[in-house]
Length: 127
Image (cartoon, rainbow, N blue to C red):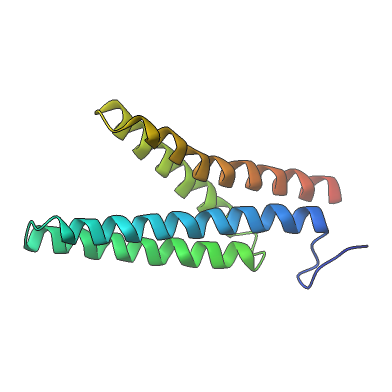
């Protein structure tokens, strides 16, 4: 296969894989930032508990991004599930009066979904 990278991916598929993993890592950083904001909000133990769970979730997202970067096909379902969860949360926040710029945050999970679908289509064509 010409243009195959170290994981055996063609250049185009490697690009989609990079997009999916990078967008997932970006989501993890955003979630970690929300955890910091939760602690900074100053609501005591409750905020610390929320922050701890958000940090755990951010670490899990980072691991999912790592698995996607390493071209593990089992990560595709986790990428789709987390992206759909993030879309649902953002739509819920927008419905409850969040600032309009939150619409731009939908680009991150949207990019993950597009990348995973393109990877899946590429695998089917290769079979």
